[in-house]
Each structure stands twice: as structure tokens, then as C-alpha cells.
Image (tube, rainbow, N blue to C red; front, side):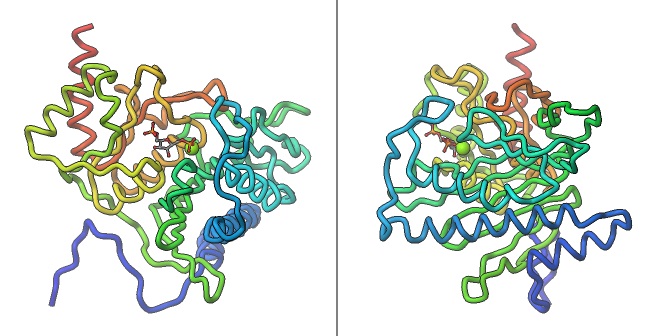
Length: 341
Ligand code: AHM
Ligand code: MG
């Protein structure tokens, strides 16, 4: 009999468990749970299914390409960025327990209700990450981060700027060769696949563990002349060690591959993005929580991403995340550089 590999996710084969029933079963473990959280997750799942359908039909419905507008970061919006954003707003906007919805595509967060009006959660998301890849049929994804809205003073602005370690749940939906929903509520990482025939996300793996090491790096190496020296030195080390390179250019797809097969994903500071390109609140934080919950690590410079305290909804950060031993290699060069400054 084959021995089971502790590094591999435990793939489920016998019982049919949907995302909905899985979340409800987890809720039973918390006697004081109100069901609020399940409502949010079911809305996220509904949004994911609706966006997946749009992505699949994009060429047929002629909704590929430029929307003709720019988002708060001055980046050109794709038509599907706007559509995905609207779908999420429509699916989550009527959930009575959501205090704030904040999106990469909107300059300001949308405040739905305060704490005393029942707004218990803040939901931050990137509706369609990697959307510049849409026209060429490459995997794109929705990323979400959920925080508790803890402030209780009357009419106080909901508390959506919190360090990532306070996330109560985080995850992503990857619209790839299949539609995959990966989520953590702080007790490990579970993976579901959309079964189109029944219209439900079905559990395929629980307690996913990222491999401890794998000689693969994932970075836009074309920018390497503009990376800080530590990252260039790391790349020289990786070349000398015979590493392989994989880069899709969609964070969700690159991190998903890294989660399942190991390696390290990097988006260092560059000439055009001196503080890094990726957004802390709705890109780096949720992905960092997933990676850490799977036994990996996620850092920005020498700091743990989940410890960073955001001061702006759209603030950017550099990112290094993946297998613990691979992150440690990059970290070694970063720390060496910092100690000589
Ligand atoms: P987006 O949120 O505007 O789609 O940008 C984020 C994307 C990430 O998915 C990906 O990792 C990165 O941008 C790719 O950037 P680059 O093209 O500079 O390599
Ligand atoms: Mg994005």
C-alpha cells in the first residue's frame, strides 16, 4: 500500500460536501455563531459562480477588452473588471451584516451600515485580479478578505484598515481550466471546485499544506535590473542552484500553483512601483493568510505581511510568499542588505 504523503493535501473522495454545507458544519463548532458569516460566504460563492459564467462567455458576449476608463490607481479598466465589481456589489450589498464593501475598483469603500446597525463584517476584494490576461484566455481570479468590524462608538467609520493577522477569513476564486474556490477561516486551507452540472462548489481537498521547499521562483524577471540588489542577488543564487521559473502574470494563478506545488512568488519593489505593485489590503493580506495557513510564509522586506498596519485602502506592498524554505532564501539576502545599510 502507498504511504500517504503528509505534504500533500488530503483529497476527499467519498462524501459529497458543498462549500455551503462545509461552512455550516464549521459553524456548528462555534456555539455562539449567529450564521452571519455563512451568509457572507454564500454571497461570495454566488458572486464567484456568476463571474465564472461571465468569464467563460466573455468572447461570445463581446465583453473583453478595455472599458475606456481608469481605476483609482490610474490603471486601465477592462470591461470585465467593471462587470465583476458590479456582480460582487449586487451579491454582497444586501447582506444585512456587512458594514463595508471595499474594492480595488472603487476609490472609497462603500459603507453599508455601522456596528450598531448590525454591520459586523468588512469585506475587501479585488473583483478580477490579473484581468489584463483575460483577452488571451489566461486564468484570472477574485480575491477576498473578511475582517470583523469591532468599533462600537456610535456612527464611527467601520474598522476596515486592520493588519492582516486579524482577518477572520480570506480566499480566492480562480477562473482557470476549472473554477477553484480556496478559503481559510483560520483553521487550515480548504479547496472546492465548481461542479457546473449541479451549480455548487464541491470540496476536493482539506487542510492543504504547501511543500516545504521547491526550486521554483515566480517573478517578472524582465524588471530585475530595477529590483533592489537583494532580489538580484537572490536571482543569481537561484540561477546558480538550477532553479526553474514559472510566471503567469496573474497573482491568483501564480500563488495557487505555488500553494499546490511549492516554490516562491515575488513581486519586489521596481522602478515604477518603488513600494511594490500589489495592494496590501485585498491582494497581499488574503493571499498571505492562505499561504501561512498552509504552512508557508509571506513577507514584505524583512516584515511579515500579516503584521503590516495599513493606513490606506489602496496601499501597495512588495511581496515574497510561498514555501517556508524558499522564502527563507530570499529573506537571507534581504536581511543581509538591511544589515549593511
Ligand atoms: P491587477 O490587480 O490590476 O490585475 O494587477 C495585479 C496583477 C497581479 O495579478 C500580477 O501578479 C501582477 O499584476 C502582474 O504584474 P506585471 O504585469 O507587472 O508582472
Ligand atoms: Mg489585482
